Amino acid sequence: MSDPGTTYRSRDEVSDARATRDPIDKLKNFMMQNNLSSEEEIKALEKEVRKDVNEQTALAEKDGELGLQELFQDIYSTGPPPFVRYANVDESMVLTESGEYKQLQEIQ
Image (tube, rainbow, N blue to C red; front, side, top):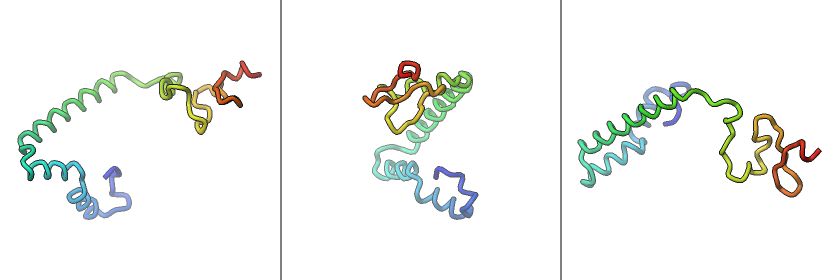
């Protein structure tokens, strides 16, 4: 479940959903029941993944926050699609009639 669940769901409903509908647990159980993996192998994999996530989290936190100029950089390879209005921070790009994005100064 992606939400914390305690806002509008009872604790019993949340724990039941986690116990019966968690796709990760379903996959683990399927793998063990069909002898695709042992419990020890799954625990070792979980430990490795948890370690990697913790390392990457620490690296990201150490990196600091992006500045406003970098926030929208390298998101689209050919410029934002037409439904994204003002995709850059300073709002200086506009969509021309030809479908190209140009600096506002170039058009005026």
